[in-house]
Image (cartoon, rainbow, N blue to C red; front, side):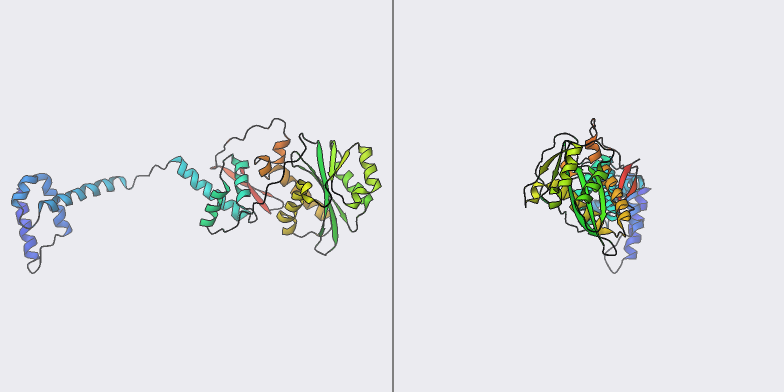
Length: 337
């Protein structure tokens, strides 16, 4: 019966293609492929007139292949956890860059490690952002020299800088930091011209209610040589260390804090008076101490360094987190849920 059907089908194909070579339609191929399972290969070779056995067998293989592709194409592919993790990490990098345009490659990699404990190199961050049209140079500068200050609060640094309000009024800002933990102890603001008495008032405002350091490092600004400034340190029982004259690199950490405060914060906003500036600097101090990771601290925050029993960072899942706003929305960092 199967042989008869095969012969009749070949005659139909020949009558359909009298003026040209026989062409097999899809239904012909399907029928001949089905007959190969009923007739067998050897017998099929004897009754075949217009087709070759190799053609039928090749079509049969294609049918088998299509069968299994149809059976399993709709099934959900099992994606390894690593690939899904990689895609989630890529999305996190892009999202952090979109939320924090000022962040470079190194800053993003450190903040991911601080939040999730996941180590990703700044080069990998760069490749991800360049592929997604974020062409920002990493901006990594030279590393600072390791400085003295072997325990918390053994050595503080103090310095000042000037900034202008929205109405172009000059304001002086004093900043004090702990050399060991890189923690900003505090900011103090003075509007207008600044003298030695104002220096003492700002410093006492910063240290109020805090444990005092053994030594205080300062540069050679004339106001730090003012007799009332020195008398104030003697009353507080704080020793004074001076940096090398004309050498900012001998006072590197506090200079870096001032530069970071300017670049990442004050250059991005306006302030209107001293009270407004003090409030905004307090917000930046909280962000800097509690959430901003530091390369010199092995990607820890100053708050983590200040903890006596700081434990090793555990790797957290990046599937469940939310974004927390800092500095009135200027920065957004991920927080593990």
